[in-house]
Figure 1 (cartoon, rainbow, N blue to C red):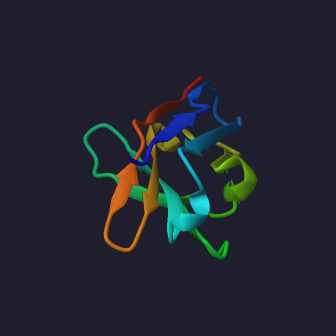
Figure 2: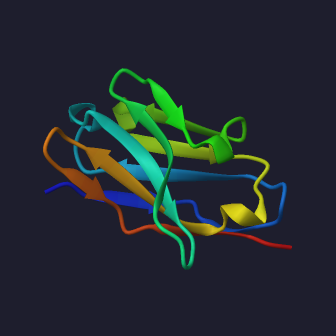
Length: 115
């Protein structure tokens, strides 16, 4: 059973920064890729960023240059550093991990960007 536990969400002012963490039960090296999705009220869940086992990264156009995804295999943790946050980044952020035939999700962490 794979467990993904997110942390680091909260309330931040526009222009501020947050770092989200996703701690996995067991080695993250077994996953083909890990990533972060987000879902705002009334909107569909969308990919924010992903990182492969080989550390190839991919970002949504809306966050390029502001967000950085990284992984620490020794700590079984994936991070999402979010800078220059905007009100439009407000959403529940979900960590995900992909194997060949299955995908796992965390419970989500709320990020609210507001003055």
